[in-house]
Image 1 (cartoon, one colour):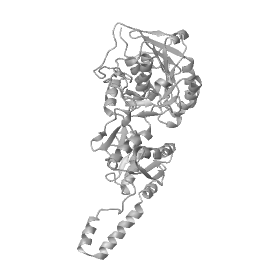
Image 2 (tube, helix red, strand yellow):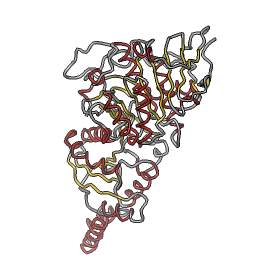
Image 3 (cartoon, one colour):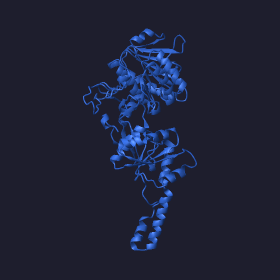
Image 4 (tube, helix red, strand yellow):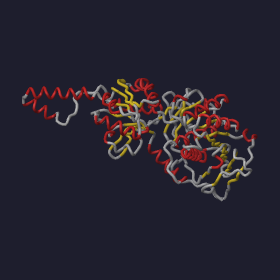
Length: 477
């Protein structure tokens, strides 16, 4: 019979450490390791079919890149569902065979499959499974391992994966777990493609393949300069995230050709937040300028002065700000509070270009008047919509936004193993890059990722693309 809608991963001998499912129709194996994986479920009922147009991703240095070096083989990617062939059944294998490692390409998937982030980890596991069934060759083995989202869990998961013959590690998700796993993986010479967006854990052989906020700011700021905005300021939270952004701003400005002025910090949720933003807006001095100007005009008494006074009605301050673009990496309720205070103290988004991060891609923020016209960088939303629709049809729920990272990374590993069998650092850092759900991306020798983001603007009817995602890396800021 065909693949059932849901099938529990059972272990017939009672050993909770190992379980394996084999699908004979395509000879693709899923090997589940660890604590939570064996008690979970899998439900692959259709294939995603992520092939796009097969067009190569080119760079300025190598415009002759041969085709099919990306994640996606040439075919129609989104042409409806593809059902698994009927008449074939799956079998449960309970004996781990070391000899099989000689002929299998084993890739570990390190995720929080237990603990407070269990649901997110499960969704990312499902996304990786979709990539495996879409793209993997006959000898590709995916090994989900639980990290519980902790440093020690990352260490233990990496130990398990490497002992099981993993030639590459995908994940973990959180920087703390990445730090734990990378210690073990580096000693074994196993490359790690993590889903974190914290560049502090990036290093040679350990790639941060998440949506890095510094790069998003660079993309949106670069767009702002094309609209005549060159004088930048930043209002950042007083925490590790804000300090990380602050440390990158001079580099960002040099990349985009802007000038960085004031950088101010606020304590999220503190009683003095209002005073911090009042000071940042130079509100008192600008308010005093307005009052002084009104007194001058009233003392003059001329017809021209009366007209000028009329024009100042409803104006709260007088005097230009020393910036015309403002970097605001806050998100959610914090962003709503900060943006409302900025408007109250007369920093108007119609005059100052507000710049955010991918975290602004939140429908709950699109109706905020103070954010109207604000811009942020994001992966191409059309690709995401197609992916999320297929995910929902397969698993019965909408995927979390970052689940595409698991799909693209698993697809990368599958393509490398299928086309050349080479999952080394050299193969991973192919300068031509790859194409996935989130557009073009490539991994550098230093452990960074480079992505091609679209620029989105908050408009009355939602966020709209105002600058498309680049198709080549020589167009990436």
